[in-house]
Every structure is written in structure tokens, then in C-alpha cells.
Image 1 (cartoon, rainbow over the protein chains, first blue to last red):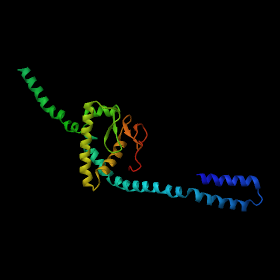
Image 2: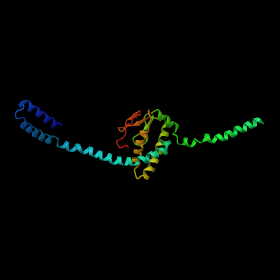
Image 3: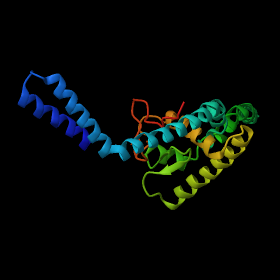
Length: 85
Length: 132
């Protein structure tokens, strides 16, 4: 997050100070600077973030298949044993 | 003599009616325990995500016994059916929980995926994303 804020901040300062002249080149320089900054600062976070959701989704998908497979049988079981459901 | 005949007629009528009156008994064997029914209607017990009944409020000892007894019977049924379907008890119980939560009627309690107790309204209940 800090790295992203850094990029935005750099761009804003650059636009205000230099106007439209030479903007393209300066923007590229700012972007490269921002990117290298973000790589340097958030390397650990960008590796960690995608890992966790992927594991959870796999878990849900596997179980969901089982749940779908059992649903018809479970519905019958509930009907036939109404006194305990 | 007339009275005797009348009595006999009544007895015959009773004999004819008795099976009709007794007929619903097998159906009532499928009915819920009255304590469970009442507690369910009052929102004292609710359907949990895991397929078992849970206490929304601390139960009286008699109610606790009835509900725990039902949960033991549920577990036995789940175990039996899970084995027949090559699934684990937990998988079968969770699947049943999905359906049982869907089957709740307005005013009854059910457990949301976050573990909180919810009162069933007109809208579909909040269920586990794995539910069919």
C-alpha cells in the first residue's frame, strides 16, 4: 500500500511542477521509480496475498462437489426420519 | 331391550370408528417431540450449519435431554447414510444442515455461516457457500 501511495504522490508532484511539457518522459521516469519502489517495499506482501485465498477456494470446491453429490440422498433421509428433523 | 340394542349399536359404531381414529398413529410416530416442537417454534433451539440442533438460549434440563437425544439419533442416521454414500459423517451432516436450514419456516432460528443465530424471515436463509 505504501508503495502505491508513493507512485501516486510522485506523479502528482511531477505534474504540478512541470506541467504538460516533457510530461511523457518524466512520467516514465516516475513510473520506473515508483515500480522499483513498490518492488522493493512490497515484495513480501505480493507473494503472501494470493496464497491464502487460493487454498480456501480449493477447499470449498472439493467439499461443494461432495455436498452436491449427497444432497439428493440427504433430502430423502430427512423426509424418512421426520421425527428427528 | 331397545336400550341394549342402542348400546350394541354404539359399540359397533365405536368398533368401526376405532381403526379410523387409530390410523393416524403411525403418522404421529413420525412427529416431533412436543418439547422440541415448542422450543423450535419459540426460537429456543435452531438448526446449525453442521447439521445438528443447537441451543439459542440456555435450555431447561428436560429440553436439553430431548435435543441431545435427537442429535445423537441424527448422528447415527448421518453415520449410516454417509457410509452408504462413501462420504464422511461431517460431509453428510453438513449437506443435511444446508437442507435443514432451507427448510426452516418463518420465525424459526438458524445458524448463519459466521456462527450467529438468525431468525428465518421471508427471504432465503444465509447459508454456507458450499450448499446446493
